[in-house]
Amino acid sequence: MSKRPSDSKGFETRAIHSGRDFVGDTGAVTPPIWLTSTFEYGNPNGFDYTRSGNPNFRLLDRTVASLEGAAHATSFGSGVSAITAIVSTLKSGDVVLAEENIYGCTFRLFSQVFAKFGVEVRYVDFTDPASLEGVANHAPALVWIESPTNPNLKIIDIAAVADVSHAADASLVVDNTFASSYLQRPVELGADLSLISLTKYSNGHSDALVGSVCTNSDEWHEKMTFAQKALGLQPSPMDCWLTLRGAKTEAIRMERHSSNALAFATFLEHETDAVTVRYPFLPSHPQYELAKRQMAAGSGIVTVDFGRSLEDTIKMVGALSLFPRAESLGGIESLVCHPASMTHAAIPKETREAVGITDSLVRFSVGIETVEDLIDDVRDALQA
Ligand SMILES: *Cc1c(COP(=O)(O)O)cnc(C)c1O
Image 1 (spheres, helix red, strand yellow):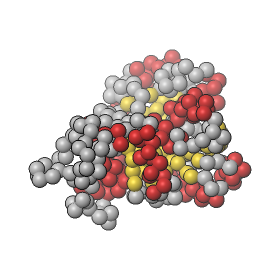
Image 2: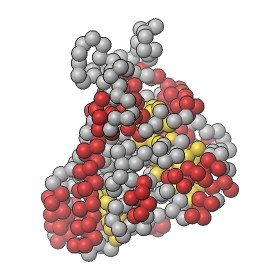
Image 3: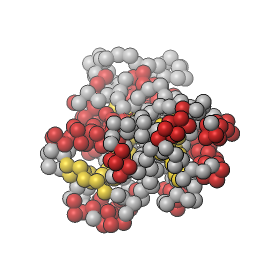
Image 4: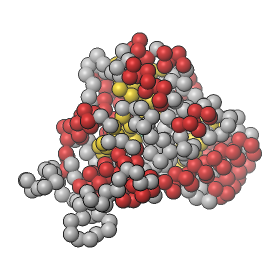
């Protein structure tokens, strides 16, 4: 505890030093992994059983809370477990007012799991001012947004949505996964809960799954630690250790992800025949000014519509050599996702297109490789 830096230190310093703790008198600079299911009764740190707490969770929670500028963080086995923890606090009849371009697994949890328990979710477009004005009419228990959204990269005004949510007595949840704590801090902007899939940018190396919920509210924090143990949503000590190691380099990785993605998006917009290129820090983005106010940089995701047929788009994506086709994002390695043939293949074409997922839409997760190589790879694949 004595080595925990005060929050007046910089992001990079807190990322590296907040997790130095619990090493006892061993002098270990890097904490061990506490692979134990249970703890001896009466230990001074208050641990009892790993489902409700473990030193590796605590080190990660302190770091994530500090980086998000929040009083508390609670870690879970994945981002989806973190979502489950939040929604599990609702009761039958409660309404969630959600952004319509929400992450697919969040939508699936709402529609195929929590709907059965009587939680009603209504969807609106939060870039439309009328949606903000109408929040109170729904009397929601929770308002649920993400920014940037997946895969359309819409930017939603977190502070404005926080104001209207609070005026309607609702708590605001922001899924901060696409932005990362380094680039955007929803709790500082007024959100009650910031939810992060640490699997993505915080870990950054595609080798573990962890989720986290950050808040300034003692009451919400209590609900989250209760959900962790009561629903069995805890992460593994090993995954927390890997994620804490990843978080130490989050700042420099996010700088490179963002500068690479901006160069990559600029290339696509100006030097290819792409129909649309979506990137929050391109001046052509519909919410460019808001993105610059709310985020420190644009993060690593670029969504492109090449305007080609389904077959040609699949061929082009398959011709890339530095972008493996894979779900997920936020790792140091670049990845490409073609929603129409991968994540959204089971959804009928008309339904997909209604939410902007055309046959020719491609989502790049731009890694931290040499950006000229990434650009050359796409140039070659477009010509193949
Ligand atoms: C990946 C992701 C999640 C879910 O996280 P997991 O760790 O994969 O369970 C939630 N929200 C967003 C925006 C994501 O990208």
